[in-house]
Length: 172
Image (cartoon, rainbow, N blue to C red):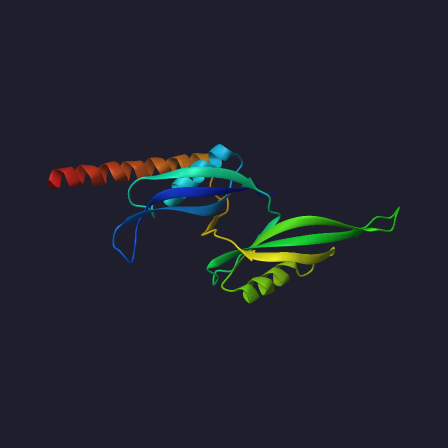
């Protein structure tokens, strides 16, 4: 089962309206085994997209049971569901809260994507809430790459960067 962390990244971004730099803090979701790995993974994911300095200002564990992706969606919605079970001894209904993230372009599409993702679920449930989040992107774990392959890829990237830096110095 995935272990999700919300990572907040702070960096300077060019303001479209004024043209100046503006410090922003943006939240992302990362699938990781620990806080340390979450910070390392978000740093690796953000480096190609952020020019200049940035910092991971916060990392917190997030309780999510599932994530439903939709490549056409540009927003993330958090869905709170209550799974309903009947207590056999008392006959009373018991509700257990669970949270899912759904990627969609609109609230209606989020509901449709959620229902499609939950299709075939044997348990009874009710949707308690659907809220749009500030999450900008979700980075699931890439289990296709071993630790040795990842280390080799990073070493190759570092070698290329050194070569590019050397070529740039030679041109000056």
